[in-house]
Length: 384
Image 1: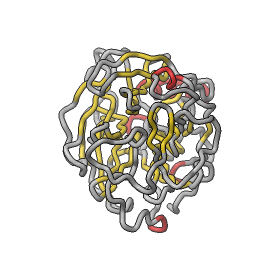
Image 2 (image 1 turned 180 degrees about the horizontal axis):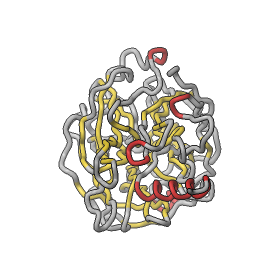
Image 3 (image 1 turned 45 degrees about the vertical axis):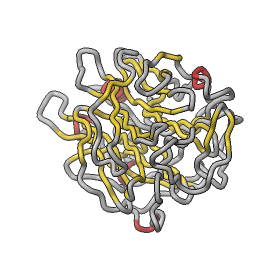
Image 4 (image 1 turned 90 degrees about the vertical axis):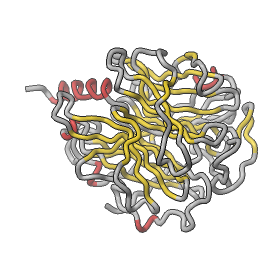
């Protein structure tokens, strides 16, 4: 019989190697460090050559055409929902399925609907006891969702971004090449409904033996790729390429440490002209936000320096907390967080949670919760 500490270490080490965790971190572009991030009239700012430029208020109307630097991760694209988000109508978890687990989510409004991309977990009779797929579900109001539509089989940890031409791009890790470990892929949406996607294309192939949790940022001077590399020893890596289809080159490991460990499940976005990174701590699976350090974000080396992280304090609820237990060991509280700036400039944080970690091969029957904030400091959650 294992002692509680041995069980914790065993489960933690196993989980680190097999599956990524999502979290959102805040990074700034050429702006001073510090928290909280200031809120202005606009949730998004265009940034070029390290200087923030004034941004139009509200959601971005541009779906096709040139996407201003810093707006590639805009959560609301095109005509926003007429009634915004009806917070009173929401109940946590906002997305769940009786026979599937869902985690590593990314939220996008486009084509007149909300789209949740996520790692779908399906129970199997094989040795792993679970199969991961990247899937998408659609909703008009964040309350009622369609059944999952699989985009990529044997894949996990999606992130969504628009390329400079306005095309939606989903990045993820593929588990199909077990001989070399997880590698990265991307697909391009064939329209703004996100219903149809191109065939898989390799992303930064061969930069590391095992690569997971990819996230992109288009800087106006090429594209930044963040990912987690390694197996028993894992670390956050930054790479750069002149274009998405170009050759990526390793830049280095960012100076981020949380709980004496690295972070995972990355999302790059801008808030009021400041590059922001949202990510999950590799130890204890908690969401943190960081700000990009001083320097020109058009220079790839700038992306190695970040502010000290600040934890995003999501209130506990019964579906994501156990009275006697340890987060990431016996339950998941707010794993794989993803930040979405809503149609009115408010912040929404989606996250994966589970009150147990026995189902689906030890990953737990994860469901997606939502929280909101006006300052990235104080968070509210809807009733269960």
